[in-house]
Length: 402
Ligand SMILES: [Zn+2]
Ligand SMILES: [Zn+2]
Image (tube, rainbow, N blue to C red):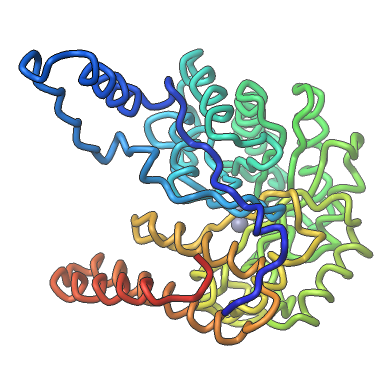
């Protein structure tokens, strides 16, 4: 039997439902009380509406554990930013990331009052704190381009994102710093990026701009801590800038975090070169690509070159408490992979013994699930069903972590 740390004894599911958060559940309650007071021959009991893909029942959501490590995922905001909150709860996340507008378009319609109100209401209903939400910037934006005209459009898009975050009451915003596009030195681009951050600070009220470390391909800035620090050095308001550490990007950039010593070493390098107070969040991704490959290829937890033990070190490290720890791993359009990864990571954060055995069984569970969905995506439906059954059975006698 696996021993867990004492705080889990008090772990309780967070209440996900409220009378107005889910019309379906309140409707069922109403019907039940009517049945008690009226003869059965009167109106037949109203039929339960079936849940649909768009209208999941909160009762079916996984239990959210109470933990100081805020583990979540980058969830979809399709159909409205408010849907991201529900999508996070659907996978048992205690933190989440989202795009606050389409990440592939320069212009999007502004957030409506309805979107903003619904987002804030759901944040309250589902019990999320803004400090555990880490929105992600558009992939189109490059603030390091030395061409001033070519920097203006990305800057406008960047600023628009920040203003949307403030409308939503969010406190953090994560972005990829940019590239020299081969037409400037890294130092020049670093200064342009910092200038954009300074201008964005002046045009916003309070949001903290969080720079993500990168894998380091081509002319991209931010794969080395010295580059992140270089940007921060030029930022005037240092209370409103930070760093998000992506584990896959760090590994691809050459930081060997596949061991406990490696994890401790990267944190001490971060503390020395950047400063511990700047760490505002993590992206938890294993890596398909090898150490130092400079390739940004995210892999599911425990299935890549980093390995599951590192993630256990991460989610049991007191320095990683109370900041968003966000999965950006492949889902094959099936959210149950994130549900499994989140529950596995929550499990790992509690372990005090039987570690190799439990790690192995969690990796097996994630592997089964990923394989079943990957197979499904390639159209081998019948095999998938069999593997799904296997995966489900595996979960029934799984890792003592439920
Ligand atoms: Zn990113
Ligand atoms: Zn990332």
